[in-house]
Length: 100
Image 1: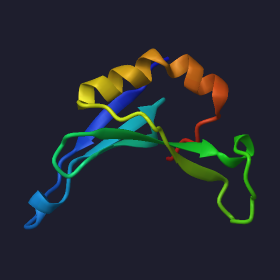
Image 2: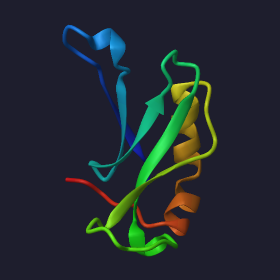
Image 3: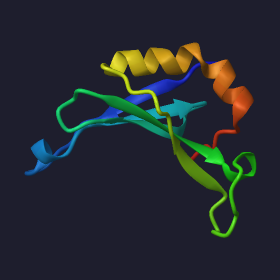
Image 4: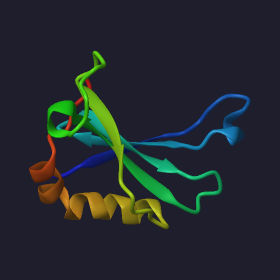
């Protein structure tokens, strides 16, 4: 099992103000994003996980929550490689929420 990635380029008149979106997919369903900083100096990974695996109050109606990895990466490819190398650890520690 591997993560796949899709890059959506910003379009429109003000596209230079918005970074490109890098979507993380598992089984062809979105489960997170790779966020890039304003000047493309750092990349951060966000994943959607089921709340039953998180130690927090379930006061909201949502069944999932976004979590951000503390580790920052210097390139997009480095972040992608990290995810695919550690997919077993990620899947063992938390249940990912897959969007349609």
